[in-house]
Amino acid sequence: MNVIIAGGHGQIALRLERLLGAGSVGLVRNPAHLADVEATGAAAVLCDLERAGIEEVAEILQGADAVVFAAGAGPGSGVARKDTVDKGASVLLADAAERAGVRRFVQISSMGAGRPPRPGGDEVWAAYIQAKTEAENDLRRRDLDWTIVRPGGLTDDPGTGRVRLAPSVPRGTVPRDDVAAVVAELLATGARVRQVLELVSGDVPIDEAVMQE
Image 1 (cartoon, rainbow, N blue to C red):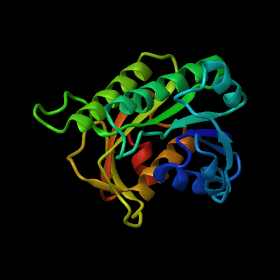
Image 2 (cartoon, rainbow, N blue to C red):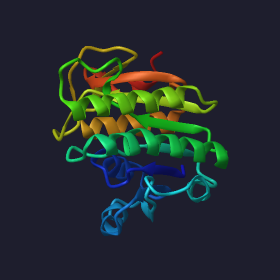
Image 3 (cartoon, one colour):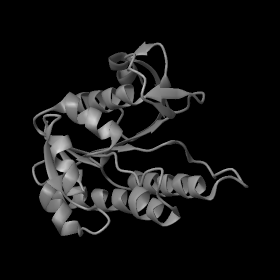
Image 4 (cartoon, helix red, strand yellow):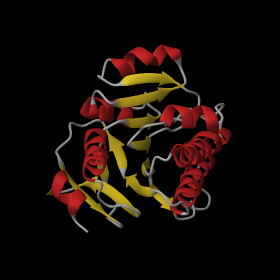
């Protein structure tokens, strides 16, 4: 498959690129990150989704089988970049996918999205959840073959290959390895179209969890 991955230097994206290998393309905004993406076996393209226009991104997406939104402003960013990256870049990528005729769109969101942030909490976290919620709402309105994945707390533990994946699951954690493996399986199978899925570690093998309805 020819899969375009926004946020190509992110920790989940790099794992996904290793799984997909040749045919996948990671979009990065920092030229220093090109080599890291290429080391996974994927191609790398310089594209800053905070500055690019729809035509530029649509041109990159021409001929792709699917797109994955794995971008995020990162833990050191403030409120403003939650809006421009976690929401704005997702909206731009979806606009470009529609323009380029790419129907399959997997969005990596976050558990907690879809609900109001807890009052009195951290301002940046609240902005992050709000941005993820608005990005989800934008995607859900579109005539695309979308799937939204909301991982729980992310860890760098080795993947187990076993998860809980459903519209609602108890709060928990999940290795980034397993998030990437779930996304790869969603892409390979085309399963769970127009579903919002929460994801934590569990007992079900990933291939079975993805195919469950």
